[in-house]
Length: 97
Image 1: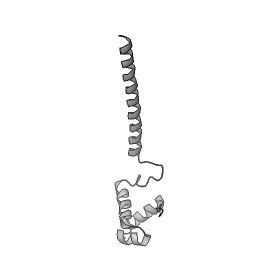
Image 2: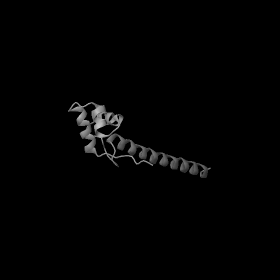
Image 3: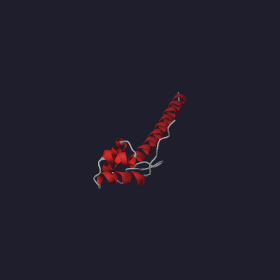
């Protein structure tokens, strides 16, 4: 099985800088760096969208993803609390009869 190559944030930003600042074509830069051109295009697009959060790295999320994860946990907790309250209400309603 072939192991995927991993690139550092610095490598990615330098590769994007080649394309954006030095005017090297994506195809030529990808060939020089031994990358597939679609990978380099993806990196260029990521930097164009948000240069500060372009390559978060392992275990780090973009702020939007972190907020989504936090909200999903909160929704799960609230659903659990709701279900407990439903069961308690049904129990006390049955007991009061």
